[in-house]
Structures are given as C-alpha cells and as structure tokens.
Amino acid sequence: MKVFVLAPRENWICDRLVSEWYENFPEYSTKDIDKADIIWLLAGWCWQHIHPDYLMNKKVVVTEHHIVPEKFIGSKLQNFYIRDKFVNCYHTPNDKTKKLLHQLTYKDIKTIPYWLNDKFWVPLDRTETRKKLNIPNNDFCIGSFQRDTEGSDLKTPKLEKGPDLFCDYIERIYKDNKNLHILLGGWRRQYVMKRLDDKKIKYTFFEKASLETLRDLYSCCDLYIVGSRHEGGPQAIIEASAMNVPIISTDVGIANKVLSKNCIVDIKKDSYFPSKEDIKICKSNVEKLKIKDVGQEYLKLFESVMCKKH
Image 1 (cartoon, helix red, strand yellow):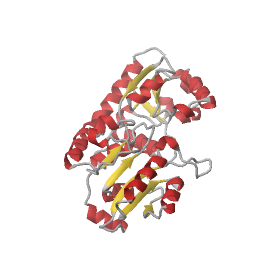
Image 2: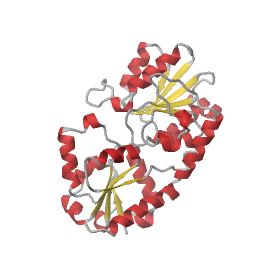
Image 3: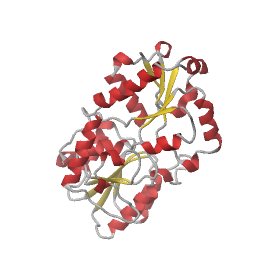
Image 4: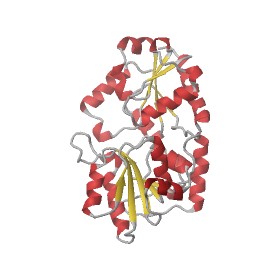
C-alpha cells in the first residue's frame, strides 16, 4: 500500500503535516502519484490540482478539517458535492466536524486527531527564549499564532477564528494588567493589530515566523489563547500543551480531547489562568498523540479503504 499526500503549498500547517507524514512513514508513502494506491487529499480544497483520471481510478481519502456552516453555501457547497463523487472515505480530526459531514454525505467518515511531533515540540527555557527574541522578562505575554483576517481586504475579521473574541478578552483583562504583551505569529493579523493599536496595548508581530521561531514564541508565553468559533484542531492546542505552556480555549476542535476541562472557557465572559495541575493534565493527554502512535490509526484507515470496492 502506497499513499500519495496532496500538499497545498501554502507554507502553512497542512504543508508541515504532509512533510511529517512522509518523514515518519516513508515505507507507506510515495511522492509519485502514478505509484500510489491511495490519494490522501489532506488539503481537500486543492482537489482540482489532481487530474480527474487519478481521482476516478485510485482510492481517495479527503481530510475535512472544519466546516463553517454560514460559509458552506453556494459554490463552496456545490464544489463539495462534485468532489464527493470521487471520495471513498472522509477523515476529520474532531467529532464536531464529523457531525456536520454526516449531514452532507453518505460516505464513510473516520475521526482521528492530528498528531504531535514529539521530537520538535518540547519544553524550552523561557528566560533564554525571551532573551533570544528580545522579549522583556517582566512582561505578561499572551500568544496567538494563526491567521484571522480575511484575505479579500485584509481588514475584515475571519470570524470563525474569533479574533474579535480574542481582542475583547485582551481588552477586558488589560484593565487590570497594564503589563500585557501580546505575541502574534502567523499572517493576516491586521484586524487584531488594529484593535490592539486602538487600545495602545503592546504587541510584537512575527509574520510568517519560521518553525523554530514559532517554538521559541510558545516558550515565551505566560498564556496562549484559542478564541475560535470553529476549528479542526487547532494545532496550537497540541503544540502549547506539549511545551507546558498554559493554554485556554473555547470548546472547539480537539480541545475537549486534550485540554483540562478547566482550560475550556467561554471567553466572552470568563477569565482563567491554568494551574500547574491543568498544565500537567494537558501534557499527559497530548503525549497520547505522538506521531508514531497516532500514525498507526491513519494506516488502519488507509488499509480499510484499500479493502473496499471503489
């Protein structure tokens, strides 16, 4: 059995997942689509990059990371149904997306979480990383590393990512803590930066930071916040937990599978700082998602697809 994995070539998380798959499971993988038994559309939105002849004549697995119901209309919904004709099985990282998928297709759906690259996401010395990135030791640093402004105009908030909720939370706690320092990673952060500028809240933006810099940024954080309304993971839940970074999140994606229940909050009204016990629980839960272990679940999925008729 050989799997070809489609990468979006966006220099973003899905590309990283594709690289990690090929690195860790070379004996089951091929970068030559002609030699593949299974085409894994990890970046399902790029499915039209594959010639229809391949999609018709090989097994096809699509990862549906998350669905934003209010956006899943019109041409996007039509595109889903066209692609669905080629699909043998869907994969989703969380049960919330699976529930929505069941309303759209009769095809098999398997839930398997994203994995932890445990060789890379390891705890670092906070003092050293702050020195390295020129972040003052006395600042209370809150991290957010994603993209949350719509690309169409670079000012409209991408509401599924919750940048408005994140900023509301920051503004609320800033009233009692003027020593806040917001660490922003990723790209398309214009909405958040404008909100922070308007309130004169200190921030540092590391646009499209390298993976090594991103790891250092996590290490600098006193708190990481996931304020999304819809998510597949996000990967930040896995990465922050693995690095012993205090994290809180809305109840999205895989949050309830990884985080201590105390760390899942309604950020519209609640404020919470994780305890040492919370951090320990998050770390323990994420250790179950090491890539070599979770990868076996993906292999079982592919093997089951191979056993079924197209």
